[in-house]
Amino acid sequence: MVVTIISVILVFCLLILSHEFGHFIAAKACGIYVDDFSLGMGPKIAQFKGKETTYTLRPFPIGGWCKMRGEDEESVDPRSFKSRKLWQQMLTIAAGPLMNFILAITIFVVVFMMMGTASGANVIGEVGESTPAAAAGLQPGDRIMAINGLEIDEWVDISAAVNAAKPGGALSLAIERDGRTLQTVIEPYFDEEMQTWLIGIIPQKEHLNFFRAIWLGCVQSVQFSVAIIQGLAQMISGAIPADVAGPVGIVTLIGQASEYGIQSLLILTAYLSINLGLINLFPLPALDGSRLVFLTIEGLRGKPINQAKEGMIHFVGLILLFGLMIFITYKDILRLVTG
Image (cartoon, rainbow, N blue to C red):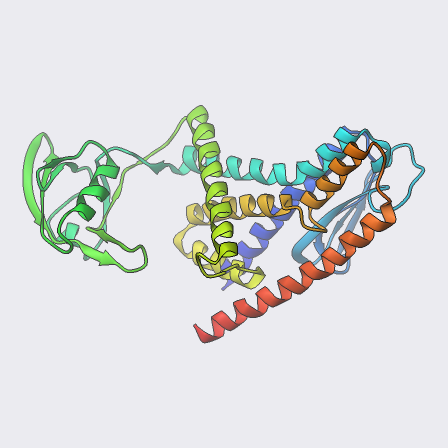
């Protein structure tokens, strides 16, 4: 429980801090006056006054803000948000979600370089206890050369061969160990959670260099983003049941990830950061995507939109967003209670 609580606080703070810091550094770079930079919600528990910005820490790590002068109210300050050029305003708003993607890529780079990632080679890294692979005598370092006569060149060939065989049927494996070729027979088992046939092995890990880690981190971030968008599209179309996690659901996921170790927790943090960045780009009132839409309309019209009307739309959107979060939290709690 203590580990879960610490993990939840650290993950939430990291996600919020990266998002708001994106707005903050972009605002500073564009010469916008930032009145308040806050991490957390609720009453102030700590405060520091910088040269011009007040930095505050609040107890509940479920939100935060970067309050820029003139963003939601009229201001005659020459350094107000609305006094900046349109592209500077749009950059400042987009920088929050962008920083979430940068955080995710950074996490992937750290994981791939320091902790390693699964190698694509057909070499066994670990053999699970009490699994068919262990019963058949497979060992870490064994290279799987063939399954049921099918040549194995890389790790993906192993999964394909195991699932291509007769369901539940015995597999004949040719393995290379210490320069010798050995034969063994394994009966796979069906994993209900993953919905696939397994034999109980995982690939070797490899530690990537900096440039490969960045490339793979970008690829992984794009793949996660596509998966999230596809999932949301399928939920909206009714192709799959709507299953959205709120704060309680995310706390549960973080707790589960922390049980598997720091690498699982970091990967989940990267996934949540991508999720936060994407959601904020949606054109929904009170989100960054909506503000970008208003700025785009302003650019097309050639004149500013009435700030009072825009502010009211964002306010109503914020109320609806809080209502949605309360509903999702209720569903999360109900799911936990009912199992």
